[in-house]
Image (cartoon, rainbow, N blue to C red; front, side, top):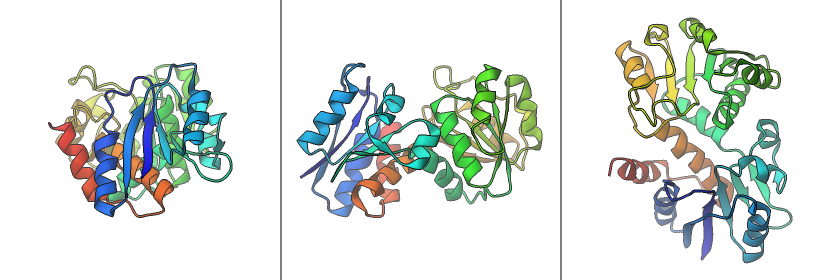
Length: 268
């Protein structure tokens, strides 16, 4: 039996186990998905231990995504983003990937949103914002990053191809954008809050909110009200997990089965 899992601290809230175990059952894999919660200063030992024990693969979440970058062999995208959220074990050193970026692109593709040649605004310059900015730029979008701390947005923009950055006072660029990604947690703790003034939204916009609890955030409600394409955060969560599954197994991920398991847990 192959063992996969999630390493983070804390991990009790994770929605990954039901999603991945549904995938194993659908594809006939003899595998389990478990969670690991090492101390915050023990991630190097945890990765070494997983490798020694024959763990087949790990997802990585807060607070370890950046620390793991220095422990494994990251692929070029993970190195550019500066974070690893998926580790594959096998021959040689563990390999590190960032599937959050692919999750962003695949979420838009699933909703028939063409990214090449678009202009995009990413709200937030943290881990999710970095992944989204690189993903959109690599897909052919011209990206603007808006962040509460403007300097952090400008620092990220300096390493993302052809990107710009600024403070939240630059959110009015959404008026002329094709794509919007909320990569902050605004709307999660206080469901009626939104990081984007509703008057900036319009019908020619595609909006992805990385927040998945609740599924219908205030931002998505406002976007839907003006006729924009809306993509809830569960799609990003699902599709980054699907890419991890494909790295580990070499199989096509059973997207619909994983989606059903994820949304069943979210709405339980």
